[in-house]
Amino acid sequence: MARYTGPVCRLCRREETKLFLKGEKCFTDKCALDKRPYPPGEHGRRRRKEKGYALQLREKQKARRIYGIQEAQFAKYYEMAAKKKGKTGEILLQFLERRLDNVVFRLGFALSRREARQLVNHGHIAVNGKKVDVPSYLVSPGEVIGLTARGKSVEKVKSNLSSPFRAAVPEWLSFDEKKQEGKVLSLPTREQIDLSIQEHLIVELYSK
Image (cartoon, rainbow, N blue to C red; front, top):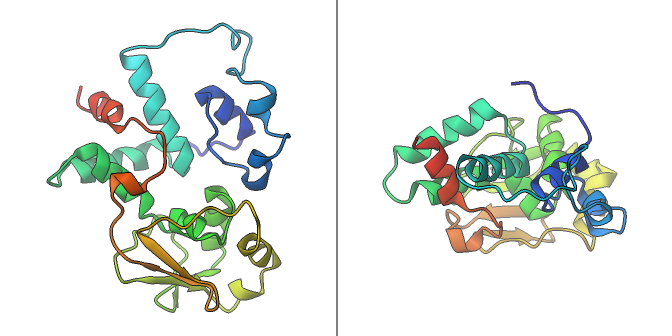
């Protein structure tokens, strides 16, 4: 499936919740969901109570869109989670949180995961001092995430780090303001992942 290239605010309206895909705009009165809090399309205003498969599908789509992941890649993460001991849904979210683009966003180098992915792709992010340009790279405890020499000169990154809309750094990460680098303290627990995702619905969907 090709990557979605349309207006991302439409995705928030479809899921009827803020996915924070546009960074600063999501916190202002320009937010499309605040203006039109109903799904897009001709029948968007008609409220339908989704249940069963439709509810499970919407939850999966919401999680996939939050992290900006394509269908095949999301399914791969689920397969990886299902093979591990523990609650599959929580392990799935753990994998998603450990993605380098998500960590870059969580540390505040970017104001959205989409912007974070671009920083990684352009070679502005380093892990343990070495450039990593793979957004899906999974970080591990003890690893240090910072900026490359090129990344330190990017004005947008500088403004993001001082922005009032910068994401709060979760407990499983730490950030050194002086060095402008973060460290992975541990694997994230479900309590430390501040997303309103009902992961059990995703597990039910893939378990059919």
